[in-house]
View 1 (cartoon, rainbow, N blue to C red):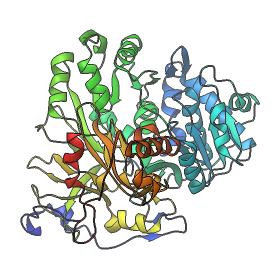
View 2 (cartoon, one colour):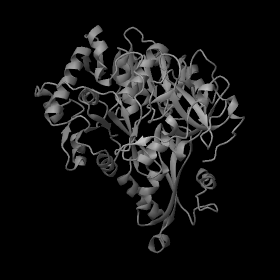
View 3 (cartoon, helix red, strand yellow):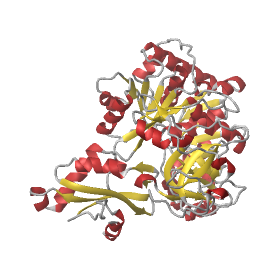
View 4 (cartoon, one colour):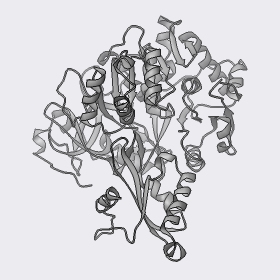
Length: 555
């Protein structure tokens, strides 16, 4: 990896970073997870996600805990439902360390299932409902899933595995029957350092990698927010993005429960529908992707009154242009904060601060439990202003000293785990620098990742599918700028010699498009494809994607 502007010598680097040993690779177990010393305990409770409802249950059992449309559960009611789910899953044979996968649109079942797995020591896995059968099958096999909870029309994707079904509209189905059976929830001792959840993120091989998290490191975003953003009286936290994304479960319902507040599952992501729900539900805090924020700003039928209850809006999951933030403030009269985060952290790790200097290209300041370290290609820490790889580590002082931990590793990927966690820090693969105020500026994408409307698309994964088409001999996939989505996926391909190469290029592209739709989620399917005579490569045989960008921008 080529890193830019290595700057002055190591002597000008922060003292805590000088002391970090970056050359030691962690030992890895047979699951591909790092073997490490236990971190210090969290400065405040709870110590496990299994106890996430306890504070609300003890202090205000009759306060709303979970709302979805006309459905509402108090803390006492949700706790009873989670106990029923845990009892049912235990009676079905799920043991600690086994994997429960959920593939559902946002509904109360997702929250119940997540909290139930945490009480049982079962590992939770969310599977996006946009994924097609081939993608789901890969994840189920890689994670060795023991039980799938999904809708009736997707149950066949379970294959030979047991499945429970849910009708998201009225919550009927075998999942509800299991909960109604009255099986008592077993009492299980939970180790907060054991695997608790898996979040799949694509990698350079073209197949997804499962980032495994402990209960300990799922808790820090919500707990640390109590001081950085104290809860409002009767606060209502809205979640519109998919809860099958682990980061959204952490930043949505779990975040709300660790603050003792109300989690509201929003049904709409379109501008009008979302604005109506925010107004009717009185939402105070929400996380958006840039596409949603831009649609709200642009829509003439959405006005300031619709979002008047919002006191904190976070725009994450992609590059947020300065004009979007200024337009948001001009229209809605409030400041939308941006940040930087990643699945392996988990969730956001930096955020803008209303009381600290901001810059148009900034990604905010490190959150309380962690620090950002910038390193060069030899893993030596760099001083402020020098661009290198962004790494994350726990702070060394204060109540959060040596508490924060990243993922346990990538499931069944020992080499990737060791490389990412070498030196006791999380290597993100992203490039950036810290300015003189300690604010992070992100300079480059990780492994050529494409951010389409807040969704991660990795070229290698799309290229793998297109190369399986019999009419394609070579392909390269890249992202090009798009005003609304940030980036869109495009592909340049070379036809297989013979009938495919001699035929109508449009027919080949139509066939490849159909093939992609059957093997990839729709958001990963290239919006534009071109048949090329050759794909430009350098002397080392590496594709020079920069030479292709003008071609796509001109067509």
